[in-house]
Amino acid sequence: MDIEVLGALDVRENGVSVAPTAPKPRQVLALLALHTDRVVPVASLIEELWSDRPPRSARTTLQTYVLQLRDLITTALARDPGQRSGAEPDRRTAKDVLLTLPGGYLLAAGGGTSDVQEFERLAGQGYRAMDAGDFAGASRTLAAALDLWSGSAFADVQTGAQLAMEAKRLDESRLCALDQRIEADLRLGRHREVLAELTVLTSRYRTHENLHAQFMIALHRSGRRGEALDAYQQLRSTLGRDLGLEPSPRLRRLQHSILTAAPDTMVSPAAPAGAARAAHVPHTGPLAPTH
Image 1 (cartoon, rainbow, N blue to C red):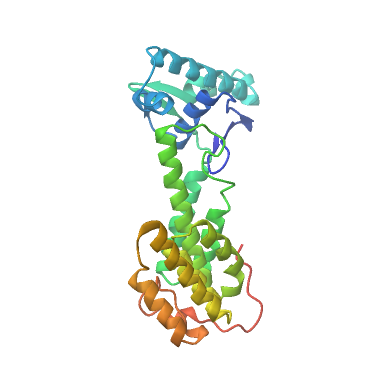
Image 2: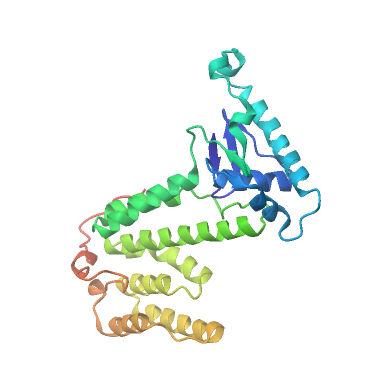
């Protein structure tokens, strides 16, 4: 079973979609797919579907949704030539894919793929590369992780409390990976390449200090010191107006550094000690592609 939730929901068995179109069965499948190979308690599914006001028929209705999902799985299994051959030892049924277990239900991936699991694997690999100072490897690996996303998590699924919380968690993980991929690119001297991206991101995340810091650094290294200082003032105004806060001490230090430092000595305030030497990479030719 191949599972995608980083964007529109897509769950396939034998290449055949088993995702229903009806909103509530789709919710059930989304929660089961996110927790593939783990038991999802009936209580969690009921809370996702009806919050704290479930109908008296909640358990029966949930069972109906599970049966609808099994019907779709049965159709998909029938597309497998091995299933039609009647070889009983290898024959799977829908109940082997969507299991009823004590207290809940489990969706068995059967060795298939999960975009969430692949994203988390690649992101972790990218973070370790950053820690090791392998900025080219970090940029490449984190870019591959981010390429798995086609939109917000569960973009076409009606979400209750649990899926909404999980979507927020996943989107935050995506933002962290994006932040670190840009950090790696800045360490490699790719400040001009990330300017357009950072322009969009700082407009979208108007109080995200690290993205603004990266934007300021990229502008300054591109010879646009005035715009870098304007970006700081814009952030300061937004923080004061929306949150009643001043920029953090590290942002104030960055502003001071821009006023006094040459562009090619500027290092991100998120950089670990000793990163100044790694941050400046002479441009002797065209940069290698990041993807």
